Each structure stands twice: as C-alpha cells, then as structure tokens.
Image 1: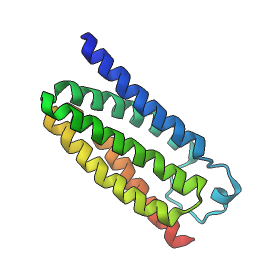
Image 2: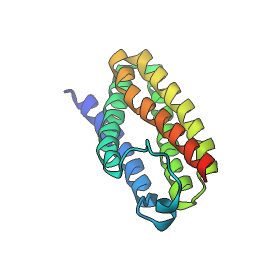
Image 3: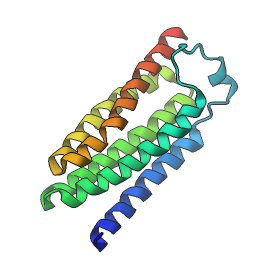
Image 4: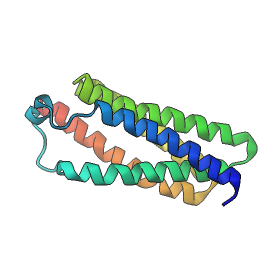
Length: 156
C-alpha cells in the first residue's frame, strides 16, 4: 500500500469514525420512548444493529478511500464531498429519530440519505467498480431502514 493510499484510508476512516461516534452518542435504543414505540414484528433484534453497522462503516471507509485513490484527479474532490454529505445525513438521521424523537422528520431525512447513497455509489462506481459494489450493502441496509422508519411512523 502506498503512502497516499494509506493516508486516504486513514482520512476516510477518521471521517467515518467521527460520524459513527456522533451517531452513537445520540442513539439510545434502550430509552423508554423508543421501547414504547409500536414497531413491526420484522424489525431486526437490537443485537443485529451492533453487528451490521460496524461492518457497514468499515465498508464505507474502505470503499470511499479506494474510490478517491482511483478517481481521476478532477473527480477526487467530488467523491470526498459526497462522502461528507452522506456521513452528515447518516448522523443526522440518528439525531432526528432518537435524540429529537421525530420519526416523521427522520423519515424525510432518510429519503435524502438514500439519494445521497445512490450518488455516492455512482461516484465510487465510476472511479472503481469494486468500490461502488462495496457500498451496495450500505445502500441496501439504509433502504431497509427507510421501510422500517416508515412502518414506525405509520404505527405510531
């Protein structure tokens, strides 16, 4: 691994780590408010989130770094900016849903996150197919989270 690639991976890992940490700070799935929500029977068990999200965050960091390293010079900044927007939306959903206790507003925000995911996958794919493919589980999980968020809004 060249120094540039290691530096890029370090930067994307730090950005993803900050987003994950900030999201974790505002997420309280054990709160009375969250436990009392009427949730669908098909919601994954709480342990699933602790397994899935670290893996997804690792894929985001690696694939974004890979895409930045392989993108033409004029497109690297665009990948980095799209990653920043995406991570802000990712963290924002947690803040709106858990901290602000506004599932309906969070639903609108997660729709924007899905658009951001599509754009990030597209930019990564153009730079490097593997990077784009590695982002697909994240996009799929977020799409599932959108359906779950929607069900919670309907039921409450």
